[in-house]
Length: 282
Image (cartoon, rainbow, N blue to C red; front, side, top):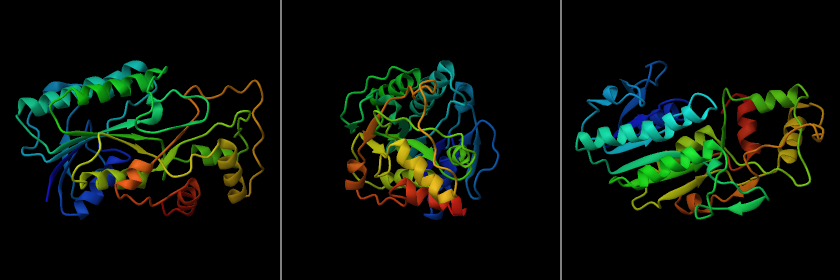
């Protein structure tokens, strides 16, 4: 069994920690404040932004998962989480002469800037215009330049239990969709995030990058109308000229590489995922 550190053991990391614990692995969960960690996960209170708090990491780590979150939509916070924090952790591992078998960095599809609804994969151009994608790409480059074996997973929009803003917007008739052109969305259920990370830990010779999204990059009109029908709510109207489009791009992400590695999605599309959320089972 492996010794695993989950740096940023929060929304996704806690589920991953539970699953790895059930597999018999020894798991440490790193957070600024040790609260609400799953049973059996060893707490590690530290701040990735403060190198001194990272002294004395658990020795002999086999795998390190980096799932830090910025805590707000601000360039400084993104740089702290995805560049400085990652650099501090890598330096701490180096300083302790640790040689984990793999460091897994959770990135995002925000690294893509395509706005024409085109398909993208792990090898598509990454030229983000927004600071979120830029800082994530900096983090990816920092890890690639390190001496550690590593994998980057670029997740789409993560949804699941306790993340019901889209559902509430449809329920309360606040949702709007954009057309001409349709705005495609890429998402993945929280449990598939954890499942994919757990799966990639066991892949003997993984690729350097994976896209973590479901199999249906549907446009927002399709998603909103499906939710409205399921909820018995009015069909959302088309957005007017006063409603701004998303600045985060319009692309369709392929998950072929992840599926070809052997991972089977628990929620292949938003329909299965949101059905589980609405029923309280996922």
